[in-house]
Amino acid sequence: MEKGHADVFICIIMTHQPIIRVKNLSKHFKLRTNKNILTGIWRPEYKTVAAVKDISFEITKGESVAFLGPNGAGKTTSTKMMTGLLYPTTGTIEILGHAPFDRKPQFLRKIGLVMGNKAGLNWDLTARQSFWLLQNIYEIEESMHAARVMELASMLKVENKLDQQVRRLSLGERMKLELIGAILHDPEVLFLDEPTIGLDVDAKRTVRKFLRKVQKEYGTTIILTSHDMDDIEEVSDRVLVINDGVIAYDNDLKKLVKTYSRHRYVRVLFKQPPSDAELEKLGTLTQQDSGVLLRVETKKAPAAIAELTTKYEVEDIHIESTPLETIIADIFAGS
Amino acid sequence: MRYLRLLYVNAVNTFRRDVAYFAENWSNVLSTLLFTLTAVLAIEAIFTNVNTIGSFDKNDVLFLMFLGQVSFYLIARVSFVPATEFAEEVNSGQLDFYLTRPVPLRFFIYTKSISFLIMVRDSLPPLIPLTFIVDWTALGVTGHSFLAGAVIFLLGMVIEHCMVYMLALTSIWSGSSNHTLSYFWASRAENRMPYENLYGWFQGAVFLGLPALLSSSLAASVMLGYSPAALRLAQVLAATVVWLIVHNYAWKKAMQTYSSASS
Image (cartoon, chains in turn blue, brown):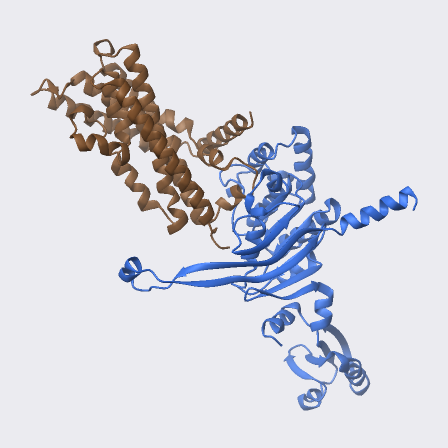
C-alpha cells in the first residue's frame, strides 16, 4: 500500500474508533421509605431503586447522539455518570481513555457541559468576564481566546451581548452565551442537557444549527439529552432510547423513523369533501379541520393516495411521516 | 502560579460583582458600627465598678474585642459567605459546573467569592475607632508572645474555616444547610471572654465546639502573656491537625455522596 493510502486508511480507522465505551453500566439509588418522621429518624428504612440497569454502548469520534426517554428513564443519570458527576454502582465507563469519576484534569479539559436549566455563567458579571475566568481555568492563550470568543459569538450573532450583565439578557441570548462558554476550550465531547428548554422558535433554530456546525467543523462529539424531538431530529444522527433504565433502541435516527413509522399521514383538501364513512375505508380519520387528516398504513399508502386523487376532486394533498413523538411514544408503550 | 492566577481572577470577578451591587448592603456598616459602640459602652459600664475581670483590665478587654472583631470580619468574608454560596450551589446543582472543569476544586470553591472590597468596607469603620480606644503601649505584649498569639489566631481561623465548610457540606446529604450553618454564628456569639477565666472543661471544649474563642480569647490571652505560649501553641496545633483530618475526610465522603440536583 502506498503511503498516502495508508494514511487515509489509518485516518478512517482512527475516526471510527469508539471514544466512549460504556459497559454493563448500572446505577442504584438508596431511598428512604419511612413516611413517619420519628420512626424515620429512629429506625430508617431504605429501598434501592435502579435508575440505570446494565446498559452498554459505544460512541465514535464526531458522532452526535441523542439520549431520549421519559422523565425518570435514566438518561440524565447516564449523562451524569459519563461526565463524572455520579459514580456508577456497577459497570465501567471509558471516555477518551479516562474513567470520568476520577475527574482528572486531562479528562475535564476534553469535555464541555451545557445544562439548559442551570447557569454556568455568573449572573452578576458580563459573559466576557465569565469567559475570562474560563480562559484561565482552561489555560487558553490570550490571542487565541479573544479570536475564539469573537468567532463563536459571530456564529451565534451575540457579539453585542458579550459586555452586558448576564442577568439582563434574554433566555435565548443567555443560552447562546452558555454554549460559547462550554466550547471555548474546544472540547472533544460536548454534553448537552436540554439546551433549548424555554427558548423561542428562532433561538431554538439558531442553537440547533450552531450545534450541527460545531459537530461538523470542529469534529466535536455531541451527547444530547432533550425532550424536544426537533432538537433530536436536527442535531443528532443516532438515538439511544432509554426507558426504565434500559436501552430500548440504539441506532440511526433515520432507521428509527423508518422502522417504527408504520403509518403515513395524508392531509387532503377536497373541493367537495366525501363522507367520513367513505374516507374511513382508507384509513383512520384523525382530524377534520381545513381539510382532512388520514392515518394510513405505510404499505397501503400508495393505493390510498391513488384512490383519493382519482375518485375525488382534490385541491391539495400532503403526505407526512409519523411524527417522532408518536414513534417514541410507541416504543415506550412497547408496541 | 496557576493557583495565584485563579485567585487573582476570582478576586477581580468578585470585586466586579460587588461593585455591581455596591449601593446595597451599606446597612452592614451601620449595624457593625452600632455593635462596636454598644460593646464599648458595655465594657465602660462594667469597668466603672471593677478594675479587672480575671487578669484582664479594661484595656486588655478592649484589645480582646479588637481581636475578636478582626477575626469576625475575616471569617465572615473569607469563609462564611463563600461557604453559604457553596451550600446554595449544592442545592441548585451549580456545583456540577465546577466538578466538570479542570480546577483544583477546593481551592476554587474557597476562593471564588471572597469579597475583599466588602470586607474592607465593613471592617474599617468600626475597627479604626477601636484602634484609637485601645492603649497599645499599655498592653503586656512581647515579641515572643505576639508571635505565638498571632500563630494561634491564624490556626484558630483555619479551624473555623474547617468548621464552616463541614457545616456547609451537610447540604450534600440533606439538600440544604441554611439552618445548620447558623450554628456557626451561635458558636461565635460571645468570643470576648478572657480565656483563663473559663472553667477547666470549657477551656478544652473550645477546641472542639467553639473555635471562635481560639482566634480571639486564647490568642489575646497568649499575646498579653496570661497564658503559657508554648503549651497553648502545641494544643492549638494539635487541634488544627485533627480538624484538618476530619475536614478532609468530610470533603471526601461528601464528594462521593454528591448526586447532583436533578435537571
